[in-house]
Length: 314
Length: 277
Image (cartoon, rainbow over all chains, first blue to last red; front, side, top):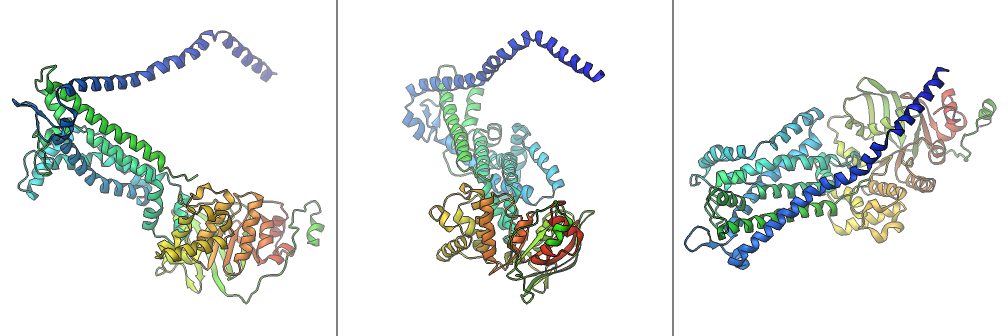
């Protein structure tokens, strides 16, 4: 009897609630609109930034030809006869990125293999969060670390090393992106189903063969995506190179010398007193756009690779 | 069978296939298990198992879920060691050598004792690469030989005609039944002596199941096959010997004909009549 009463009560309560739900229904309907507006904010911001970059660069390219900008090996923005060749900056960016990947790829990948395939569960549970903390260290700290610790250390090995050079920030940038490669690659490898490992082991594979012939190929799309993201992060990295690599606009292959990256150039010029409307001021936008195109291409290819090489193990 | 129906007139799920006496005690013993005990941490999963497995025969292991039949199968190629905290006592002799001997190379054991899993688990590679994987890790690099191994293995697994035109397509484009036969072909590619099958048809539809069963019957001319199955009719159809496991013990082990027609133990009789399971 009491149960029946209770049931009716619930029904009544729901009906009463329904009557008062006019407001709720209006809210439900307005929510998608609200969310759309908020979501479009970030899209609009991106469009705005791209618009500014393109339009301001346009001013720059009225004064300096695109060809001489992209093929010039001399960058002398402040001289009497200013020259705006972007190649020294490109060289700085690519060299430091290359050094960073050289450091991060083997260490990151091997850490990922260890964590996903060899580490006991409790080790993995401790190591992975620590690794991810490394990713949270502010880059200015890394820059400082490169300038005051790594460079002096390297001087023992390479006596001719300049006080500011591209090698040291390259290495430190590599350390910075290790967690990115390690963590994302580890995720990709852990996602490979255990039945693959069992299948391979049951055929008499050694553990190493399982890792290199089954797990890594199966996780390849994720691993490559992590590497590409790490490269893109290194290309865009600013603080470390600004602090530890100085501002010489050298076009050289000598990694013991100071080189300037695109990002460091932007820091230098915005920090200086480039009068608005001057060529040097507009050159900022041209360099920024070059940088943007680079990272955009990297990110697009990461998405493309991840999709194309997606291994299906249902 | 008449005694069974007399005692359990309402139950008639016993296999209706004709059983022949096919087991032959003159065949070489490949696996000899003596007093095998196995614990998962504190759980005593296998209790005093004594079993012999002979070449060129199909040995079926039946029993309800959780009775230890898969555990026993995985002990034979030591895959059970992938589970943390496993302990064993007792002996398993493979061709008269102990498989627990520290000097034994476990990779070599697994090369000679192949395994087919419950769920088809082809590698995310092409059909060709799936078959060539085993020979390749064991050092065969010659393309001509590999091509030949791939074709022979696929033919022996009765799947060649279905896949010969798409050898370089992903193995995941195949149906479940085809994938399972591909996994059997992958196993055959390294020419093991024994093939362990852990409920190989439980994820397949009836038609694919029949194909796999036919394949197993033909494979036994060359291989010793140990098959774990939930399906008693399947055990009756394809096996020469049957072991009935219950709660980690071997309740009965005999020729399939005897187990299904004259079970010695009441529990075996009850199980094959479908009274529990």
